[in-house]
View 1: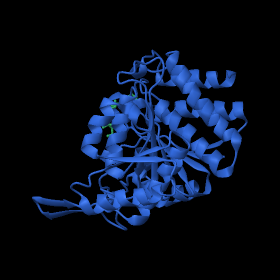
View 2: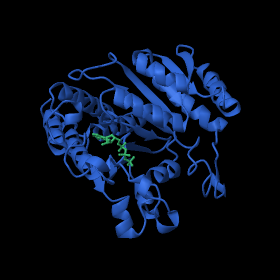
View 3: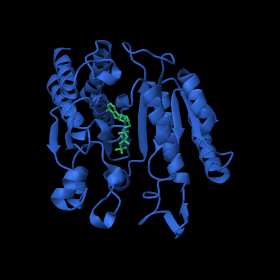
Length: 353
Ligand code: ATP
């Protein structure tokens, strides 16, 4: 399996280096023959190539089997005509990575303030309120007068159908429960359509229970009793916000692994941002990116019917859980190790299981 590795900005280089240690250990232990090809995106690419991402890089990614994208300083990238393209948007859009899968669970060794839970947010990734991806070119945000701005939200039948199917297929491998999160009391047409299509798709999965919540009420329900949820399917912006909450409720935003998957390509990417407040201090939690890498291995194994990749992914998931329990982790999850040492400890753990 050939993976393009792009460290990114802020805490990206540190967390990606730790992730690479873990991937290399997993490759040796499970005989995966991983080929990690290092390249640049974000600020490093802007300095080197005059753009945060390039067509040449996209072609390399298309020719590979997977992509690991580090956190990007998206807030810095404002003007596409100066090469300041949001790399996260670029790959999601160009590779049609429509399903953003964001699991959140509690771990032994950390206080579960809200009780134990294990859920997955399945977030639509290619339209919704994201003005830079719901339109063919340009942006769906407009400044009508200096004092009036409009942002458009796009919802389409085909995008609703495919994200709903991803959620139901995932639920079938878990506790067979899908929760639809929406704002159909206000966005009656668009979110009404989203709910209807989720129910239509759900008819193909009669063994999966369905319920739905309005997004604002959902914030209360998920904080009150996260264990009542299994798979949560929602539109782009709601999913982005909800999954940061569920990651933090699980113990730390630094545990939020995430996979962006389409029918042909996939990209592992931490749920959090570039965290400039803690960059360069060797304190960022690398597990979010490590878990994302394990999700990428699992996706590749499932797609190509290659069991060792699925076993390796499970080895990494279990290794992270054991490391947290043993406090071989960063401070945000109760450990005392630095970013680098956390990656090294997990790599050693994997080589000895
Ligand atoms: P960006 O502008 O790139 O989105 P941000 O700092 O606004 O960056 P996040 O990177 O998501 O947003 O960070 C939110 C908070 O969570 C910050 O206080 C950050 O330090 C913390 N955080 C994020 N990622 C991690 C991590 N891997 N380990 C520990 N703390 C983290």
